[in-house]
Image (cartoon, rainbow, N blue to C red; front, side, top):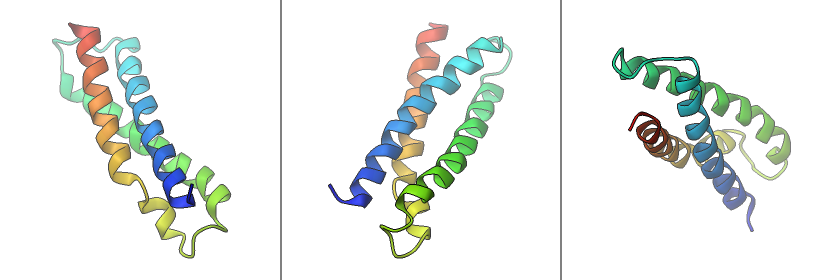
Length: 98
């Protein structure tokens, strides 16, 4: 598997995991459903961005020799990360509050 493919699939997996964790965290801190789902979404999005930045630096250490430009490390898989994050967040959030 090419380094770009493995980085893509790592980001996809992280999107699913972080999506579930942020939905569960929003439930655990006790944000009631009737109060404001938008606050819960922004809290989850903040955590998703934070985890993306943290994993960027971790993955940069692993993939620094495999890419010519370090900007390629941040852009590879960014779309799938956030798409899978939002899909997973919505599904878990819906299951919790159903």
